[in-house]
Length: 228
Image 1 (cartoon, one colour):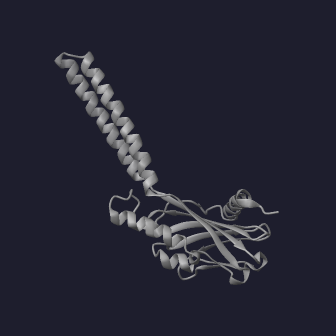
Image 2 (tube, one colour):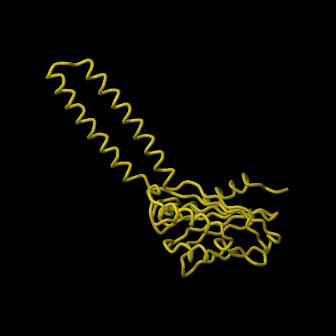
Image 3 (cartoon, helix red, strand yellow):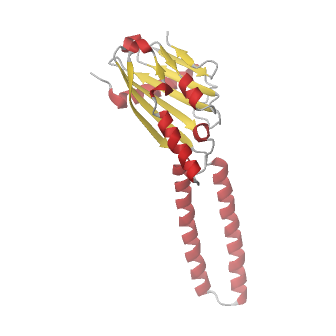
């Protein structure tokens, strides 16, 4: 009976835990341009799930929300490229077929959330200013309110700076495969991904299939994870 996506996802989590316990200094998921993480899980019936977590920069060379037609074209082209079977190469002898690709997250999602929060804060500030203006009429009260407003604006500016410093955008890409001969799966080749997106410098790759587990940092010069 097929494990299904939920069980394959559990395999991915088990593989991540295994890699971390094997090397306590290894910090997976850190947002570093040029670096990313790929987890691959397979079941005995031939279902394979590969999940890439990467800074948006590695795919688009920017992390802000797409602002121009050129930006939007870059994001759309990246999605088309990621859907190509050549991105994740599984052993030819295993006869694997790509059955689906999903791309989630990214700069647009991060920006929309920030803009919504900013608009909400702006509306609240506007209502607060209107109430203060109605309740206070003398010059001193107006002066105090002006000082409070200046102080509040400064706080908003600090919050904006904090968001800019920590609002990195990550993208999660998932591929699903069906392999006719899963027992002959012996490697994961990422040369296609490295060639298509040359911002990638290092990919922390983990593999788990219930019987075998492997973890290795791959680079454009060494793009293949061998499964023993």
